[in-house]
Image (cartoon, rainbow, N blue to C red; front, side):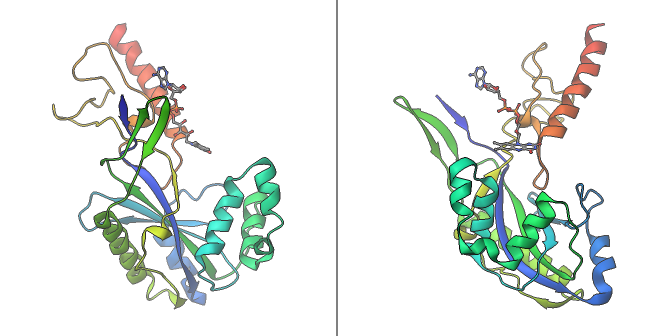
Length: 252
Ligand SMILES: Cc1cc2nc3c(=O)[nH]c(=O)nc-3n(C[C@H](O)[C@H](O)[C@H](O)COP(=O)(O)OP(=O)(O)OC[C@H]3O[C@@H](n4cnc5c(N)ncnc54)[C@H](O)[C@@H]3O)c2cc1C
C-alpha cells in the first residue's frame, strides 16, 4: 500500500538579506499581504511562477547584519523545531549569540518588534503533486521524496522575480538566486492530495463531495489545493464549519 506523499509540500530556504532604503519601508509594506500574523515585524510578499502553477511567499523578517549564511539558517530552523534535550544541546552552540539569531528569538518568543531597515528573507514555495510517496516496505514505513531540477529552476525564477521587485527599494541586496537543493531544507503543511475542481477530472467538487459517491465528503488538509505561505489548521477548521452548514442543507 502506498500514498501520495503530498501535492503541495512546502520547501523552506533562506536566501537573502535586503537592506531597504530609508524611504522604501512604505512601498515594502504595500508589496506585502494584509495578513502579517500577530506581530508587525514580518512582511509576506506573494510570488507566482511565470507558468502560473506555483505559488511562493517571501517573508521579510528583522535582521541586524547582511550575513547570508546557510549553516546559520539551518541552525535557526533546527533550534525552532527541536524539543527537549536536543534543544538544550543546541542552546550551547556559539551560533546562538549571533545578532540575527538573538533578533529572531526576541521577535518570536517575546513579540518584540525590532525597528530597522535590514531584513532577512525566508522563501516558502510549493512542490506540486509528483512521484513522492510513503509506503510500507515489509513492516517499515518508508518515505521516498525527491525534488526535480525543473522544480528548483522554477524556484530560481521566482527568486529572480523577487530580486527585480526589490531592486528599486533596497540600498543593498544579497539575494541568492542560483539555489541548489541544499538551500531547501525543511518541509511542512503537506496537503492537496485530493484534487478539487469543477469538472469530472477532479475527485471532489466545491462542496467537498466525492464525485464518485453521493454521501462521502472529504474535509482535511488534502483538499487544500494551494497554500504555500500559511499554516493549514485554521483553513481546515473553516472548511469543516462550511461543510457542516452545507450538510445541514443537503440532509434537511
Ligand atoms: C510539527 C507540526 C507542527 C504544526 N504546526 C501547525 C501550526 O502551528 N498551525 C497549523 O495551522 N498547522 C500546523 N501543522 C499542520 C497541521 O497540523 C496539519 O496540516 C493538519 O493537522 C492536517 O490535518 P489533517 O486532518 O489533514 O490530517 P491529520 O491531522 O494528520 O489527521 C489525519 C488523521 O487520520 C488518521 N488516520 C490515518 N490513517 C488512517 C487510517 N488508515 N484509518 C483511520 N484513520 C487514519 C490519523 O490517525 C489522524 O488522526 C503542523 C504540523 C506538524 C507536523
